[in-house]
Amino acid sequence: MWALVTAGGSPHDGEPLCVGCSDRPKALLPVGGTPMLQWVLDALAGAPAVSAVLVAGLDDLSGLTCPLPVHAVADAGDLTANLVGGMGEIARLDPTADWVLVVSADVPAVQPAHLQWLADQLTGASATEVDAYYGIVRREVMDARFPGAGRTYARLRGVEACGADVHALRVGAVLGHERAWQRMLDARKNRFRQARLIGVGTLVLGMLGRLSLADMEQRASKAFGFRCRVLEWPWAEAAMDADNSEQFELLDIDLRSR
Image 1 (cartoon, rainbow, N blue to C red):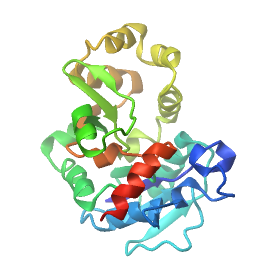
Image 2 (cartoon, rainbow, N blue to C red):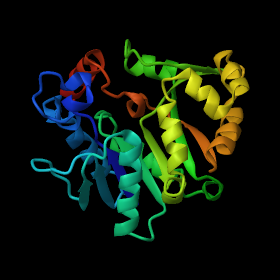
Image 3 (cartoon, one colour):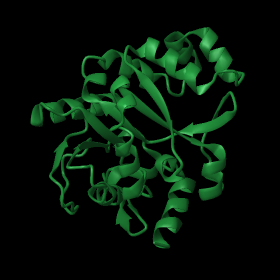
Image 4 (tube, rainbow, N blue to C red):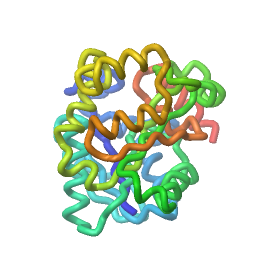
């Protein structure tokens, strides 16, 4: 199985963690004494299901190591472009590729067992009815593992959760659906765009905490044109990204203690 690591982000993009770091990309910032991307590559190499890696958003991997075959494509400008470009390169390198683990380069605490657990979800009969697994982590799981992480949580019926940064996508759920992905990622932090994308009624029900996970799966599948499934992670590491200095410091302390 392929893994796609999204590794964009630099001082030129206004990435806050890169301020004062010359031209060093965010993925190469050292945390716990090791570049963030190296932690992710090590975790992928330790997951038996992963056989090859493509890094999208960073074309120079010098100084990094991985026992798996690793390919790279340059930063295409934003997350959507890197996702689409990375999937396109995987399809070119391996026309038989189907499921791909998509991992952000800024979740350095993720472990091989976590990634293998996600890969194992793709082997059951139910996986044939899904095109995209979107990960979430409950607030209580995150708070227990990383108190004060400062994540943003959404309220659903019976669940308060944040989005993970590790997902599983079929190649065909990205290629051919580029416009849907662009709309989806553009709307992540804008409620008006979310309303246009998924409908005002859905947005209002979500804000009121009246949508269930099943409701979200059904409505997302209809809006985006491929079959979506929400997957609840039992580990906080999949959602512990380094988006600001406070989260970076939490990760630095945690990784140095290993």
